[in-house]
Amino acid sequence: MKRTEPKYLSVQNYLKQQIQQGIYNPEDFIPSENELCRQFSITRTTARKALDELIKEGFIERIHGKGSRVRERRHTLGLLNVKGFSEAVGEGVNTKFLQPPVRTFWSDEIILPVSEEDKNAPCIQFERLRFVGKTPVMLEKNWFPDTILPEFLQSEFVDGSFFKTLSQRYLIEIIGSTQEIRSEFASEKHARLFGIKTDDPLLHISIKFSTSNRKLTIYSELYCDTSAYPVGNSYYL
Amino acid sequence: MKRTEPKYLSVQNYLKQQIQQGIYNPEDFIPSENELCRQFSITRTTARKALDELIKEGFIERIHGKGSRVRERRHTLGLLNVKGFSEAVGEGVNTKFLQPPVRTFWSDEIILPVSEEDKNAPCIQFERLRFVGKTPVMLEKNWFPDTILPEFLQSEFVDGSFFKTLSQRYLIEIIGSTQEIRSEFASEKHARLFGIKTDDPLLHISIKFSTSNRKLTIYSELYCDTSAYPVGNSYYL
DNA sequence: TAGTGGTCTAGACCACGCC
DNA sequence: GCGTGGTCTAGACCACTAG
Image (cartoon, rainbow over all chains, first blue to last red):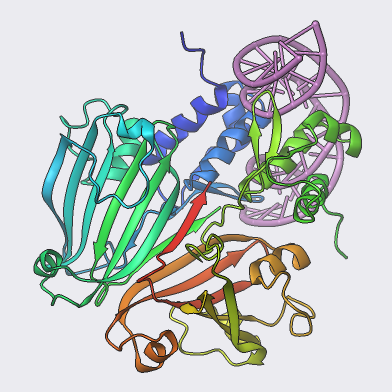
């Protein structure tokens, strides 16, 4: 039997969904603390706790004397983006599945240590090649245990985004990560994929994402051709 | 005239210094919330606010039913380390100043945009080459405005660490960063420094660090030979 | 001046860890 | 059972923003 969820969590999730559904857009102000107190019959302490959590997750910011405002771009906290992926105007940003999500085994291509608990679980993997225009810039491989995301194999990604799917369909946020980064010579296979020479420099990023659900850890291996589009990321407390 | 600092901030800074001075070591439990209430004549809400901030800064973690424990390794939040720098046993970790801290001009080597406010301020720069044993693995260049750190040029680094100096001497923490990462061919100068061939892959990381002091932004350019020691980092909410 | 967020008090009850 | 942290109430006063 699960005990009832805390009030602040209900409010937090309610507001999060309002933001995700576009009812509040970036730059909009969400209801004031006093307004939330009235709407949910809670005290300001509880309302502020809910807002504190949303701030930590990067959804809003507080402005003294004005209110709580939805943040422009979700600050990605370790989610690496190829710079220009969203900004590249005129050129389309494309993604091609080299391997759609499938039940498989844990690979020894994963650089960072896989926990014993994860190893003993079945594994879901998928693999995508990302383009700016027609130029392939990133090969992305992901693995995670098939224990916590119901119907994952049966459903499409929300807006083609894995992390958006986690957030919107499962209310799971990325809360941290460990990375290792290498500059390598491109292998033959990768050189072919990116249309570069073997021995050209290739960026190799290994990531282990922690999420707000203790049972979900995501392991990623990224290979990037940074000659035209450097990899960028930002994160803030 | 500056108004008095909030009580939670006093408690937060007091505890932070106790931890930094080794009065509480990793795995130790700091005083309980009720104990802090008595010691500082505050309520639990205020004590918890101070602890919340220390959690966000990565100094402690709460364990339900037990207490608040000092965290093993300060989770670095964007501060990139060469893996093995501290773990490399038997081999010494060395740092050589190629350029000690000096008053100079803003360089166009800085990749990420320097704010107008910073550009109009004088600039301090320093440059270090980091070794594992006798192997150079990272060239590190740093710039920041000379407006906020009194006596910086006149004093030594705390334990040879810039970030430890910021934290302990100035009570400034890193709270966020923006990075761009590239995999490049080594230039002649860099190949010479690292003892590798030109055209070997070299990792180039450009970072802009935000700190708990709004006036201090740190700009860094890092060049890493990752063939033996990959670059790693971790961060958590 | 009204409304917002920032800080703080003085309680309460519950859930978890440990003896 | 006792002390710890987790959640919550019902207030209070202050500082900032904007009309």
